[in-house]
Image (cartoon, rainbow, N blue to C red; front, side, top):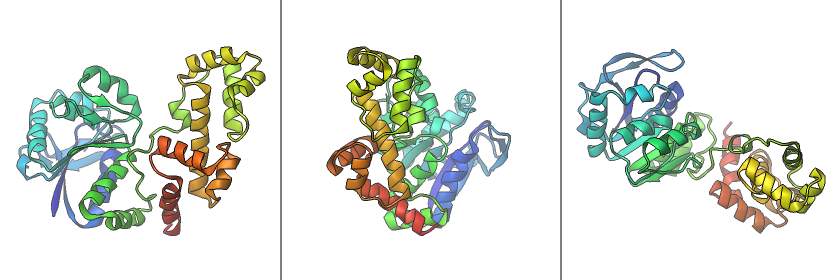
Length: 317
């Protein structure tokens, strides 16, 4: 039995723990231990009490196979616990694999374990992580990232995707998919899939002309949305719209249109069986190959692979 140690602290996020814990336990192939500074009840950020079965004095750090640090609003306070950081450092040095969920990456970084590594976290912690640990290569677009034996993930449900990836790494795709089916999850999302949907990654327009353009794009992704078309609807010159759109939303109109269309394609692929070529024409990509290239660039997998994951989930729902 491979031993997984989950590190928690006052104010941790319950789902960051319970989601991955259920994934590992469902396989029947892991021994899961919940560890805190001291054994006993530990309060989550929502007030739920969870029992840490072990304190750091009770579990030898060299006996941990997979170390997983849980995130939550209490992580900043936990970083002040020198004994907890020392135990994490010792366990990480001997563990075969080290992982974090959400803001748990801050504990790994505080323990000096991540310098020079590519990591991710929940999008709301990106600025803090970059500011406090400039030696890290922070990429908050993927839902999880692997750099050698270190794995980091975005928040909450992304922790389950990470855990499924770890199970697949250990025992193969079929075991991971069996767990996903048992837990009624969509079959494992690839780590490269963006953690942002359009409402999350996009800033809000500050002016009426740009708001008009954004509303037009979101209302009908497959319509003509060249800069000249958008500018005509907004009553601006193409050059003026390009400049204002980019300044207000942080991306140029063409990139925004592509991301909205990819989001629409993701929903269509997950929910139906429309052929890729037809989908490409309906959503404004023109050809299936253009859709495939844009989809792979934004999501990290081919449209057919993305659909297969969701088709499998629908068949077992």
